[in-house]
Length: 526
Image 1: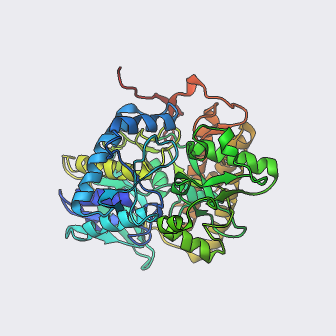
Image 2: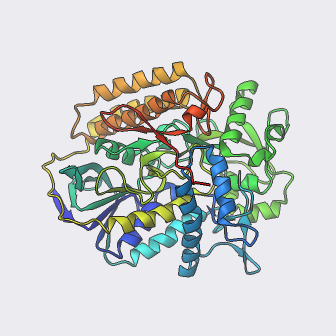
Image 3: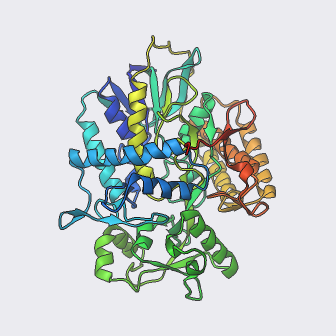
């Protein structure tokens, strides 16, 4: 095994990981471990923008109000206040550093998205905000001489000693070598897990690896039952789901059923711009009622030249698939998009395991509640990536020694087993833990996931089989929390408990070898 020594190890290279690495580099040497290339992440593919209350008619207070409304009573108010205030600071700081957001006549072009009461969404390159923001931050990272990237390298174990983080064990896919990173602080920025669903907008890397690593290390997981389904992902049989940004609806696109009727007008005063959970659920209802697999998104009534200019990347990609964004009725249906909960942290990204920090989609900071407000995710990466790195740098005391650990290898003979079981898990997640759930389906899922986890529990060094165990563990966490939450709230909808219950205005926490706990939502004193 190769052994390295770093002050901080960042796992993941999305916007949260790159932000954490950049700020961590001000305090010491940093390793960035990523299982693909540095520029492959959910952040990179984000078509939507970044929300920030920079307009004259806007304020952090209004942004906070919208975030709390979307979160349906599960947001921790102190965390949201930090997000909207420090988020504005981080965005202005990036602009000062040279980040180019879209402008017209010297003014920033601000978009509108679901559940926002003001135009406050900054975009870059129209529908390429994630790519441009990630690439900009990556350039800042590459300029720091004390940051070392480790691409095509996956973290396989968090190593502890005396209850504290001592390092990370990783596997390099290209060389097959095991790498050991000795460090006092690990910042997990591994992104979400929506790829464990059969239909997802996420890249193949978004499989919840960080959740499994943290869980095995004894970290708490919270609110993981809340999975956000993006309402408008292109539906083409046999093809991957392709995200059509919410900003398209922000510019006036309509959702039509198979009778050609705008059904959202009758459901919510914001119609197509209602919160995502509401739009996704009512698309699901239309699909059930019609017996078809999709509804339609229509931009035919909008200025075609403006649409081509505003959404040039989406326009070009849809052309390649045989659709014209400006003329055609686009078949869309919901797809798993964002993990609202995650690894439980405090306001500085710290977990209950000393030396372990989390930021970005992998974290449950208390900001998102039961349903993420559109375009708050990139903002959360900037805010809590910085906070986590600065807090990690303050860790004192001697480093822990690395414990003895056995190597992990990638075995080509078990690849087919992994793919077969992973497909089974993905289908089960879509069927039993999709947009609408019920007790029988959740109980069935828990039993099946427990059976898979039990079958692979004694696997210690075969990477493919360890991934099966990790997937089953993560899915079981989601199913158990969903079963415990006997209500419908935000992204969690149960046919057997169709209403919100005041008894469940709490966070659901899970920790290895412990019973499920409830934690009170933090409210600010009036």
